[in-house]
Amino acid sequence: MKLMEKAPAKINLALDVLYKRPDQYHEVEMVMTTVDLADRIEIEEKKQNNITIFSHNRYVPDDDRNLAYQAAALLKERFDIKQGVSIKIEKNIPVAAGLAGGSSDAAATLRGLNRLWNLGLSMDELAELGAEIGSDVSFCVYGGTALATGRGERIKHLPSPPKCWVVLAKPLRGVSTADVYKRLDLQNVKHPNIAAMIQAIETNDYQGVCNNIGNVLENVTLSLHPEVLHIKNQMKKFGADAVLMSGSGPTVFGLVEYDSRMNRVYNGLRGFCEQVHAVRMLGE
Ligand SMILES: C[C@@](CO)(OP(=O)(O)O)[C@H](O)COP(=O)(O)OP(=O)(O)OC[C@H]1O[C@@H](n2ccc(N)nc2=O)[C@H](O)[C@@H]1O
Ligand SMILES: Nc1ncnc2c1ncn2[C@@H]1O[C@H](COP(=O)(O)OP(=O)(O)O)[C@@H](O)[C@H]1O
Image 1 (cartoon, rainbow, N blue to C red):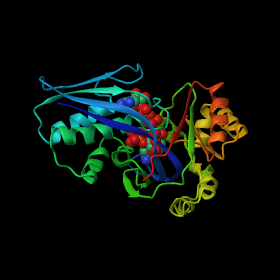
Image 2: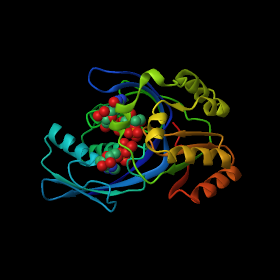
Image 3: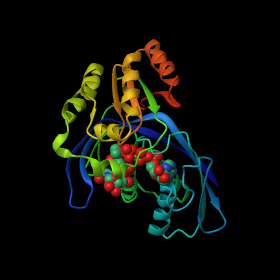
């Protein structure tokens, strides 16, 4: 048997870090939402009792470093499954980009194998298992829009943000999330107003969303990759309503309300940035 799962990318509309925890993770408050740029995960039963990963993207590991592999291995071990799977990843989400591509592949693998192996697990149970793989995997199990707290694994669902375009632009080089968190100096950050962002989403207030986007990791990545600032400035110049780096970066996203303006921002960015996408938020 063979099945498919979509693995959408996320953006962080707001990302705050409260403090560093004794376990070396950071306590965060993030408003996250999925967008319609997605990897496609094809999962197929196989005769041999092992897990194999295929991807055409040379930056995607094809062994146990792959988060989709780790998701399959976790379920196999936890539920004593004596069957193997082959997992094909059609990679459309830029890698190491702050868009949670690997986490979303892992989440899609959990959802897919729950079906393939008839495990009968609820979404909450899958999200709990996902947290063992990575901090962003729990959110990716559900997708939609949510407030993520703890190290990112505690999820409170939110309604859909106001309708708009999201233009994504990814500079050439990727960044290491661990490195960005390590360099964060919490004495010198401007905290976004998470409550105001949630209120703007709940009242469908587009201007409120634009006014309250913010990411405490942005300045860390900007200091490592000055091209992020250049892309932010270009997006603003071409007319995006609000511009921010997603997650640990380096992808920059711009929110744009009107179609005509979206075309201008998209075409303007394509002139000097290799990976540009104009997408919609997936909503709840
Ligand atoms: C920054 C964010 C924002 O959504 O996303 P990305 O930029 O990676 O997409 C997340 O917090 C990333 O989540 P994820 O990429 O799943 O992180 P993990 O694999 O759990 O952790 C990678 C490393 O990041 C650091 N880390 C991660 C999460 C957290 N709350 N505090 C941390 O300090 C730790 O050093 C950890 O070893
Ligand atoms: N399925 C996967 N897709 C992409 N990267 C993966 C995957 N599994 C593991 N990785 C590793 O995880 C790292 C972070 O990738 P990714 O999830 O795309 O970025 P981010 O954490 O910035 O959202 C990559 O450098 C890659 O080596």
